[in-house]
Image 1 (cartoon, one colour):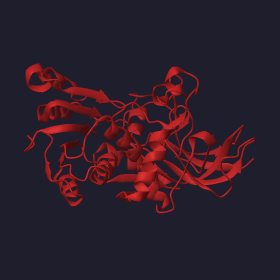
Image 2 (cartoon, rainbow, N blue to C red; image 1 turned 120 degrees about the vertical axis):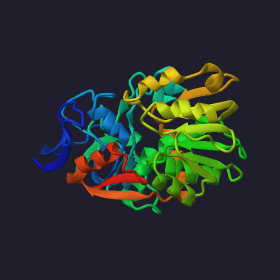
Image 3 (cartoon, helix red, strand yellow; image 1 turned 90 degrees about the vertical axis):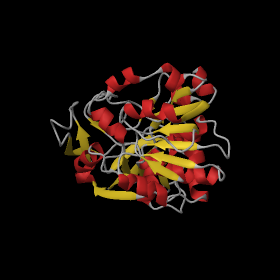
Image 4 (cartoon, rainbow, N blue to C red; image 1 turned 180 degrees about the vertical axis):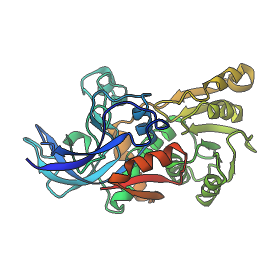
Length: 344
């Protein structure tokens, strides 16, 4: 039986207590079943959601588990009845691994809300490995304009950023705020400038390095998380893992504005800040808060097409597969400029 290398999570842990939660293992190569494809992985993005999985905020449904849901590689084998791709095709896999296809949510195109939603790298083995299998219905052709490592962050940071931008209901010429400026934020800024050429973009970020990067990419203003923006904002997308930016963002919203929270989970480290939420100052005058739940296949397909047209070129920091723990620690420490990608 052929084998592969994989970085494996065997139990929940906190990175402060265990800085190497993933173990390099040799596993049997997966075998594609009905309508599945076998992918030889070349790159996999590293996402904050992996920290949420490791530390138990969105725990895996099985152990051991191979994390990773921003996967790029080439088809090397077709399962029975698989017809959508041919051997040699370059494909990507995103956070959505599968959905039931039959519930009310799936039938109206909201498969991200499916009760049987399964996530890549959480409910099924993902991309921190040399090979993986997936249903051909949940794999996507990768536009030729992108290298493998450039394409990887587009599959989550980009796709979820696209869904977040759609959910703002922004109109061209309205002001947009971005709170946090990591993998998703720097892609949303580029996309928003293309889709809404008359919109001014304001960025809130912890470090001056991130703020300078935002200005490089076209932000009209960049300040600290707690600063007041020079103009009120019609929509804000929050991509941070903590609570304080929610309170800070709300004070910068225009009347009737919408805050979209682009996070699967929030850490509890600063949850007490919510006691500072003041109805009159933060929420009154029909301000809205909307969360983002997962992505649909439509989000991934449409975003890849838009990203290729612009084109969006992600800023990427590359690690070897064996350095996955190092990449996760850097992410935990908020050592962020663009996206982090494992090169397999």
